Image (cartoon, rainbow, N blue to C red; front, side, top):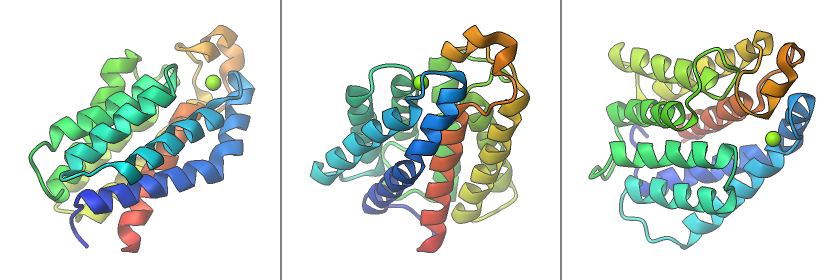
Length: 212
Ligand SMILES: [Mg+2]
């Protein structure tokens, strides 16, 4: 499979929801070190709502899937990660509007649009120890892979690799945004949970795409 239609995109969202469910406790532990220990629960609530909404929607295009996911996620998770991921999904939907299947260019566009959404909604800078530190390298890797004529699957897997590396770099950063910023230097030495969940989501998409 080299493209993603709306049904396949729903499958990928369900795989992301499965991955979040598997990593729920782990994400809560990560958040517990520098925050309020709820990130796994928050993500689980958001993706459970996405799964339910997507099981009921009559989506004709990938854009409908992204918009449904965004709305469900935002309704379920009003604070913190909610608006960030909702904006990411909304931007991806807007970027591929009118396309019935997502080809390799659209797959790279999808990743960069999500990163742009997180950047503009979160107003964090690189190095602030946020999910942007995973999204930004993921977007750059997706573009690089696109320009290097890689397949859609390779674009996603290289984005996931970059997100994982980016998430790891947050360990040495001092938090400048959100609840963890209150810890100042004590936030150093822990991975940012939002960056960790970003890497989990991109890996789930990449693996789901490749497995087909
Ligand atoms: Mg939290």
